[in-house]
Image (cartoon, rainbow, N blue to C red):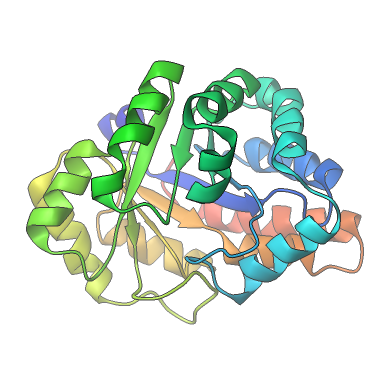
Length: 259
């Protein structure tokens, strides 16, 4: 992310739910996202109570769990695919599976499988100390989130402690496909830039090339797209159609971002 910023380029960061419609398709989708030129790829571990996620991702996670997707199977799939990818992989998971596995063991396992970073959306800043230490011991970067309701002083502290980039949630609410990106995101990007020199990536509600262009115009260093890609892949009649639809959408978003 720092290299892209130094070059004046903006990162395309897609997100998928592992195991929807199945892990074989997820593996193929990761390769397609890499081929279209993704700079970082986020991979969500399906969880039964995804607090930050809206209907599309929640439904995808439910399908993945019903199909027998487990943390171990996700890690095994990552171990096979990650070495073939140019883009670093950031694992997105809620805190409960990490606690259940054990923080050090979890971090060591996903690092060994090929993950470069970790994002834990239900973990407040004050609770990140232990998981950050476990990440650092394993050689992972912990990415933190800031939201439209985060006070500036807290935003500055989140940005200081976030590694890789700062994830700016563009809405007060959950993930989902939206008609437009809220104009106040421009002010939020400016505020973050006033307290950090780290890259700022905007997510939640980004689903069209024009959304990506708008976020780039507002000065963000990264554009994150999740629900629209998850829907394209998971809602298709067949996995093959889903891969085709997802790839086309990913390409259109990639093409809208300077690279």
